[in-house]
Picture 1: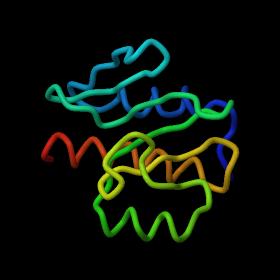
Picture 2 (picture 1 turned 60 degrees about the vertical axis):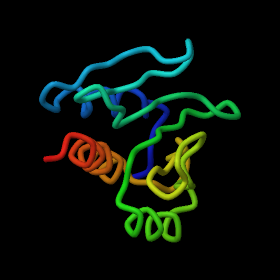
Picture 3 (picture 1 turned 90 degrees about the vertical axis):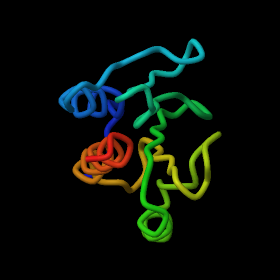
Picture 4 (picture 1 turned 60 degrees about the horizontal axis):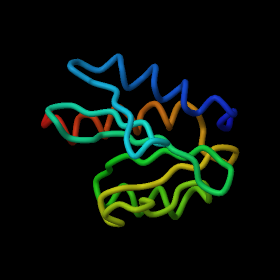
Length: 110
């Protein structure tokens, strides 16, 4: 099952289930999710499509980019530690949920 146009609501639901997670607007058109004052997920639009940036282990990020055309190096982020997921591509919704939780854990130190 690939992503539906509700990428933002899917991510928001998962992100806000994490302990002490906060949602904050960022740069007017982006939504940022933070824990301990640090971003773990950023939602925005690029070329008319919803995108999600999440932090990843560098080796996992490389594997994901090789596996899914809808996962690319982090847009406006450190390309080694962040990935961008584009809606409407080949990335399963369950994987998106896992990546949001993994990003939260990396950032929060859990």
